[in-house]
Image: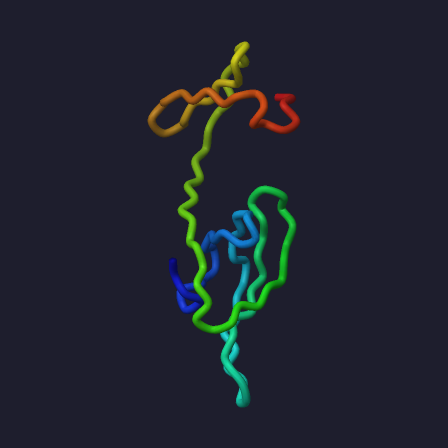
Length: 103
């Protein structure tokens, strides 16, 4: 668990049972009242953008997301095979995990 002081652009967090990437953020310290963090979050699963405000000191769950480039190789009965372009390792992904499976 981290707090809102660690929010930065590109950070991936869990919010409302979904994974979001912070597109932009702004720490606001009004003259009257408590400080807060205004954020624009983009869902990694649906692509929708959400404006959200967190109170200062609010606990957030940070998620580690890795991005790699894979090349499509072929289709089998149990799924699709991809190859990592850097180390040539092959990965099989089940057909039900891929939307719009037309390559």
